Length: 236
Image (cartoon, rainbow, N blue to C red; front, side, top):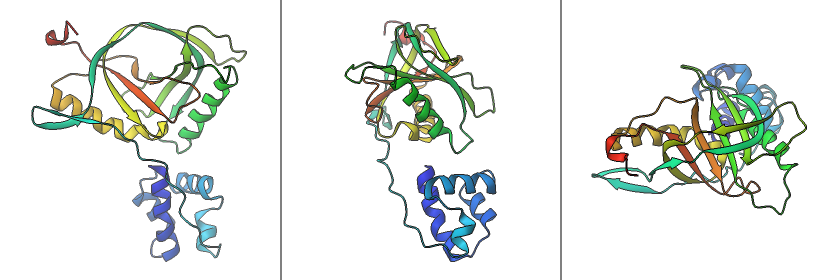
């Protein structure tokens, strides 16, 4: 998680035992520049200014860790899942692209979500979907659609309405900060496929994040990931 990595960098910077480039690499930032950009975004100063005499900084508060339930499957512990169908749904909202290798992708998703909020009655309890699609092999770039079921007209050039087809999937339930799901889901999904003997289904949709209420995006949510329907799953 980004906040934890940046908090860890404070001690390394203030001890002055490593170059800033080495710190960036040790904490898995692609470049010195990306580390500096992320650090300034969180603390308001650059790592170099902290090292050259700025007032010591306190670690930033860490949001709640992503939580999920588990089940015992044939003696192995795996994230709890349900094999189900995602039913055909028309979803309207705001579309954009993100690069998960860019440290500000969380801010970009949040800001576009807030644009959609402006078109929704605050008192309306409407489901919200975040659809991640179009990722090419060995790429960290995704197309994202933040939307609600049905049709809504948004006076913006990035408004889209899509008909998501029905597909067979594994459904996982989570609680916690929606933008910290990436690494957790990647690990959970890989273990799920290995233990359950299921296979991923090639699809333009990578996964869908579903919330019961668009105004509560830091509450419980479900992840729908396309998988192949095996003969044993036909009656599900």
